[in-house]
Amino acid sequence: MTPESVLHSFKKKFGNKVKKGRVEKIPHKMKHTNHLKRVWFEVDRTVLKKAVAHLCKEYPDPHFSVCSGYELGKEIVVNYHFTVNYATRVGEIIVTMSVHLPKKDPVVDSITRLIPAAIISEREMQEMLGIKVRGIPDSRRLFLDDSFPKGVFPWRRDEKGPEKLVRRTN
Amino acid sequence: MARKISACDTSYSIAIGPVHPALKEPVKFNMTIDGEKVTGVDFELSQVHRGIEWAGTRRNPVQILYLAERICGICNICHSLAFSKAVEAVAKIEVPERAGYIRTIMAELERIHSHVLWAGVAAHELGFDSVMHYTWKLRENVLDTIEYLTGNRITKAIITIGGVRRDVSPKQFPVIEKTVDYYLGSFDKLGKIFLNDPVIKSRTRDVGILTREEALATSAVGPTTRASGVRKDVRVDEPYAAYPDLDLEPMTPDLVTGEIRGDVYDRVIVRLLEVKQSAEIIRACLKQMPEGKIVYEEKIPKLLAELRGVHGEGIGRHEAPRGEVIHYVRMTGEEHPYSWKVRAPTYNNLLAWVPMLMGEQIADIPIVAASTDPCMSCTNRVVKADMNTIMYTKEQLHRLSVQKTRETRRRLGL
Picture 1 (cartoon, rainbow over the protein chains, first blue to last red):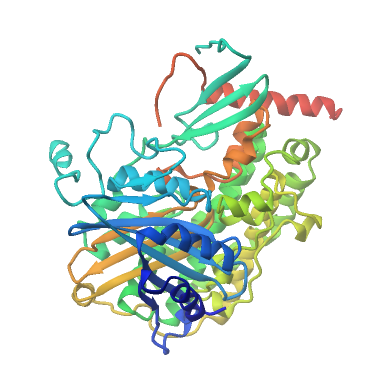
Picture 2 (cartoon, rainbow over the protein chains, first blue to last red):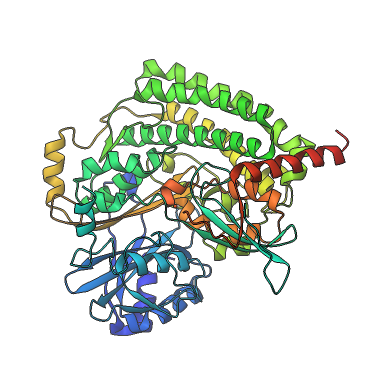
């Protein structure tokens, strides 16, 4: 299993719904970092769930690491970091799928049914970035206390971000 | 303590926290209890959300290193190392080989101190305070060595982007050797205390079971998942620093008992084995350490100038004592990173609590919760007093746990 084959299998299955695929290349002279095997690609949000299902089917028991996310202009980007082929010597591959959600309609499908561990990250993304996860089994807040104002999302950089609160706390 | 029996059945809901029953950190468990048995588990985090990632995106990468070290009060190599590795991956910075060795030695010293500390906490939860004091006395040795090497006991400030800040000279080797011998020498005694004592054994054997399937489904990491038989270890799967030169094997409990049950006892075994493994790794590093530079770029302004021109995203990972730490960094050619996401091991081990605690007794909650070595500062925190529920304070819960140990001892006729 190589990072290239992982990327190829997604490209083959989803065609132009998978964009900007790349395998992270480390310059060859870097002896001790040559073991990095990392695949990055962007999936259309309409096929995210199918892409995760494909990952589960092709590479049994994918390990869900975390979601990272940020705001980028008129979009919100959410990266789903998975690792596959772990528990093998120098074999682990990190697969990062990112979805770009328009700020006007930041809705993404929940993947918790396929990956139970994703629930924590999905709850976190909802409260931190202000996205909506469709079909999430538990949409309560997790990291933010109930006393934290509604409609303020700590990871946003626009008017919904926490800047006002920061000034208030000196 | 307020209690109310719900109208429809005999199940209670109890809230435990916000100060964690085992680790003096804030997390609140909401348990549904039927008699003595746990039938439902939910948790609330959110008291220590300190906005560290937010603060990080307003600082330059070198400043973030010291901020990252303060995420956790126990293990701080892990966050600064994972962050450095993420930045190094974005900027394609090569870390000198000697620096990789020093990073490995520091990471393993940290693992020893974290695991020995945890062993003390576990003993305390079971009511063995003399064992706690004994293990914490053992821990002092490694802390002294860390202080000798870095100048600080806990916040080591030794990792920097592209290498380390202080060299380890051959003159210092004997002190490290002595520490290694000390831990290899006390391994048998620790093993005897934790693995052979009939009371500890009966309190931990078949308690808080996490099966292999559950460990995979909840994406658990570190000793928690290895104790369930998943041989996941970043040091082996994606070796970095000096780990590619060392022939490591992930530690699993079957090495001692020949079977994997995934209970608290197995998690104790894994951590004890890892203390021994860490000592051996340090010894191997001292033997093989090459000569050379210890940092990619000594001059910080020059390094920062280089990092200012960097675009891209990267991931840095490290096998911390509690499991895999992963940092995501996105740089957009500015002084500050555009995005920084920290994921500590406890984040992924949270869900593993649910299958572990289901069906256990209230008195087992402290030791089972502690068995994943949770770190709420790393993950986050909780507080809310619901008047319709039973609230157990940590003292009450601890007393329950100690009482159970006494009863076990009596039952065993000791």
